[in-house]
Amino acid sequence: MGDVPITTGDASRAADNEKNMTLKEALRVGKKGILWAIVCASSTVMEGFDLALLGGFYAYPAFQMKFGNLYKIDTDGTKHYEVPAAWQTALSAGAQIGQIMGLCLSGMAAQRFGYKRTVITALLFISVFVFIPFFAPSLEVLLVGEVLQGIPWGVFEAMPASYAAEVVPLAIRPYITTYSNLCWVFGQLLATGVLRACLTMGGENEWAYRLPFGLQWVWPPLILMFMAFAPESPWYLEKKGFGDRAKLSLRRITNYNEQQIQDAYENIKHTVVINRQCQGDSQTGSPKGNIKTALMEFPRCFEGQDRRRTEIACGTWISQSLCGSSLMGFAPYFFQATGLSAEAAFSLQLGGLGLGVMGTLLAWVFMSYIGRRRIYTMGLGALCALLLLMAILSFAAMDKVGVPWTVAALLAVYIFVYDSTVGPCCYSIVTEVPSVQRRAATVALARICYNLCGIFSVVMNPLMLNPTSWGWGTKSTIFWTALCAMCLAWTYFRLPETKGRSFAELDLLFHQGTSARNFQRAVVNPFTTCVLDVGEPDGRVSTPSTPGSQEKETGGVSIPSTLGGQERVVAEHKA
Image (cartoon, rainbow, N blue to C red; front, side):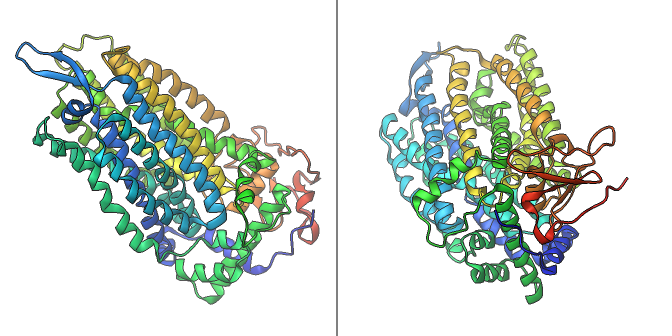
């Protein structure tokens, strides 16, 4: 394997400038990139909107009457319909299966065609697929529509956050990557508001559920109008060997002068080379490429240091899915299981999602001062406690005054805590942990794991909540409390701190094998290829070895020989 080329002062200067940049400076120099990232992330609104529609429809009189079976008749003659639990599971799982297909395609397409063209293609397809649920005469046709719509949703789940991580400065990265969560919450809030408003149409009016489906046509033309002019990620262009186009992209996403653009480009180029050397990957980017090459990105995510990075990305999104968050999608149905009316259920859902928007904004404040690892761990701990409280209350008689409202209020607080910690922070972690070479594929794999867990959740929730099935009702929170506790344990031992780290620094930390709990205190210099780990409790320097690499040690500093050459230096351990 060849050595890393001698680092120019341009790359080092650009890296120092980005790490020392204040939030105000980042907003000034990166405002164009921020705007493009926001436009791309806005596609996530559609996913949140339709998934909230589907979960809300299970508690929706017009939808129940059209697609459900007669459940019971009250003494006053009021008829109650219920969509069978098997069909609830099939519809929700169908959407998840479609998203998994979309994620597989998006990982390959992004590697072959780039982020921009992948997102534009997904927007065109979603515009066509909306016709199916809008005109669906039966549950079978509706299922087909949910599967097909899930394919572009899979693209919207993975691409916007990955694109944002590569087009905005380091100081602003956590805010823009987590903006996807805000869009998702906003989509759910909008869907719940539409459903609440359409309740007045009556249970026999089919437009009460057709109109919400049709509103999905509003978003694609608006986003397409802007995405057509969006710049491609300079990191992608450099990986594919388009250096001149990468510089042009930097001009379109920053307000740098020509010297600063050259510096930033040299930093990107140096980081890409460092990443390949750390991975032992001699393959350079191919401007043409092919589907076979793109497909091979997935198995490479489990090779060398990428194996650990893939595990962390997947584990982070799995924890987000199995911490009980799926109850939020079934919130109106969950509220009805406590004994509340449909109107009260949707009103509470609106209030909870409003708290979710406030929570996401609050998360931006947290991420300015608190590390990702701490936010995620503390968030999971709080969610576990709230689920436990709901589980305890589930043994109280639900016909007692105040008990249903207390349980519902706890779920609303759960939504607020989730959207101020685990929900948005996950997007930042998952886009920062992957290597530059494998980011699109790793994020896609992580989201596939999330959706596989989502299928498990949408199978379990209807069975537990539906009165014609297991009929657990609010006791289902016992199940989610146990899973949330398991996710908390994984997070404590395996999730590293990525706050304030450049991509090159993360490459070296993973190459060195730094433990998750020592990431924050490890000192790295990607321009001397040294890794100084000062994180051991007894003050000793940790120098774990990586299989396939040899390390030279001088005064406690570990220097990977694969990153040697003229850049390797001898550093003295500083007490």
